[in-house]
Length: 238
Ligand code: DC
Image 1 (cartoon, rainbow, N blue to C red):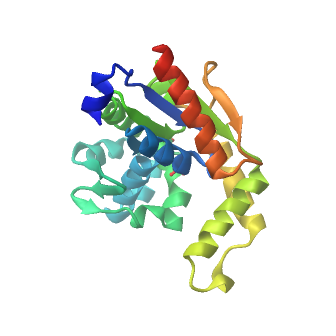
Image 2: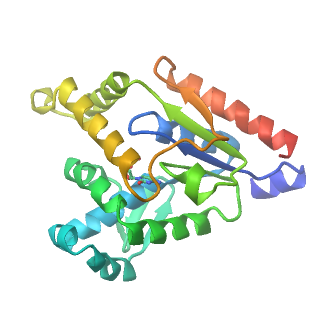
């Protein structure tokens, strides 16, 4: 694919997709990347992996008292992607990082400056050759402020809670154990607040980003809009 795009002179761009939890970022980013033959990088999975490591090594509570201890955790950490799979220190953690306790703790871990510095550096390295769709909270503002296409996805909190609920129902064997919609919405609102109010690299729209409200869009429609914007930027050579 790389050879083909180079041969016909299409610009290899970076597409930064940011937005709050459950706004459809990862599904949109993954499918746009597939269509363009680009690499998809899920930066939320990287913050989740650091959180998993902090939990597994038993230092999470200690980090709340002494955040500087995070340097030791980061000194020996490897995170890489192989297709849709995420590897932490050589083990496949794709499923483990989606557990509820990780979702609850990840905002704290991602608020620590040394964690952000380390992961931003890794992300810039991963995207240095272009042909990348990267999604997160600070991709357009911090990681790649010069990304040729910046998208900011938003959606109504109730709508996002409904999407999360539908995902849980699809994965669950026993629906009676699922949290109710109000609780999911409350957790989503809390995570938005944590991500928007943190000191380092808070979630916010870059002034150049194109905001898309996905509340009443289907995933297919979202993908179509972002894909068309990407084709426009590629063609214009901006
Ligand atoms: O996209 P997600 O829900 O998997 O992200 C998990 C958390 O990671 C989210 O609450 C905020 C944090 N995050 C971040 O701070 N910066 C990013 N670029 C990506 C995610």
